[in-house]
Image 1 (cartoon, helix red, strand yellow):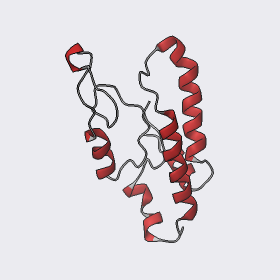
Image 2 (cartoon, rainbow, N blue to C red; image 1 turned 120 degrees about the vertical axis):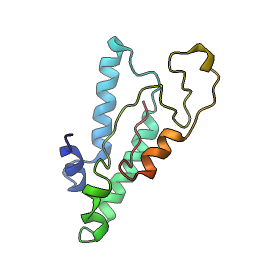
Image 3 (cartoon, one colour; image 1 turned 45 degrees about the horizontal axis):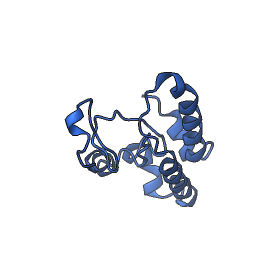
Image 4 (tube, rainbow, N blue to C red; image 1 turned 180 degrees about the vertical axis):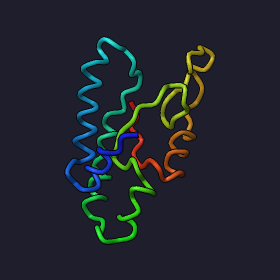
Amino acid sequence: MDVIPAEQIRSQALTSTRLVQAYINRIRLVNIDLNAVVHECFESAVEEAQKIDEYVQDIDKDSEEFLNLPQSKPLLGVPFLSKDNLRTKGLVCIAGHPKLVNDPPSERMLKLCTDSKKLELYFCV
């Protein structure tokens, strides 16, 4: 896995907000033809990215917490997409089955990501 963007975010050579905005711009460009992104949660993704940028800016760079970020949160600030068959807070998960159209959203996927402390940013699109 390429962790260069995460390294750049930790070193403040790149902001998570800028990276997320680049992802959003690319999604908007290609999704016209692909029609692959069914839920656009761009606003919340930018808000989460801004929180991460503040965290990285404010953290003591000599602290154990900062020095352990590559192990504890290796993808901090790096957005990702998930399929709509993963139950995600605030989104309906139908997984291609019409019977699930009215299935209530779940926090399970987001909880798995944040509980593992591997991914701090859940980029929902």
